Length: 304
Image 1: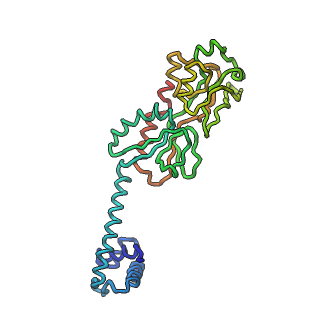
Image 2: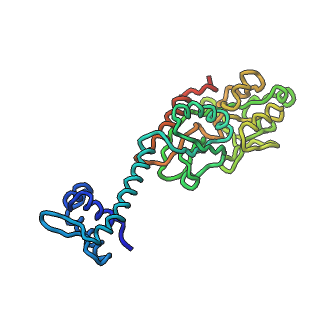
Image 3: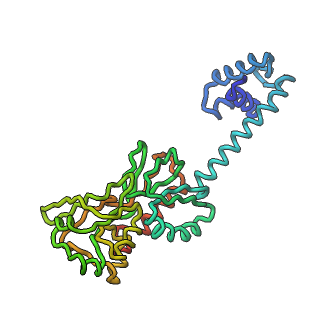
């Protein structure tokens, strides 16, 4: 089987009318160019070029070979143009993973504007709270509150995450209001739990004091909105990110407890975009991440 590189270089020699011109164009030495052509002639068992000090001409066999080799040059050029369309322009398909509740509530509503700004981009979005492998899942971007432990990943924070311990007024009337984190042991605590997040160890701090409590309850679920809805139904107390609870706190449906304590989040301290390290980061990835950072900023709307 002929080496495609030998065939490519032979076609370049013919196209540029000489070994020296081909060497200059390809960044190789003239002797290296000559060796590749000689290797091709040896494999084909025929002389392809008539060499002289003044002129280079194709033999009959060389003319036939050139027709085939020229197609390789054309295919390579077409491939380069195809790739450069995606490198230089904001276009192509973006495969993105995002957490279920956060993605539905805050990521998806931002997509129409981004796609209007970049009409040549399409997005394939997977909403899941499972930690993903960008390589195996063929994702361009993974948005997650938990750090993804993979090599060659770049991380960019989109927004900080803050938390509240909340319950409904009905529940607090029936079960009482906890005054200290240790009181949570006597309450029905609803918590987020998944393969990546245990969820039943709550840590609250005040000044230099820290309390970690292993809570118990009759409902654990791997979706933040479901935790909130169960609390709204009066089932118990939950530690929730403010992005899923702030509206209900404002309208009085949820009541924060232990307000003089600062809860640490079981889901993580920030929502972060992860993408594979690449010196030539494609514009479609860069523009989406820049757009998200600009929209979320450091003080997200749900915490204002």
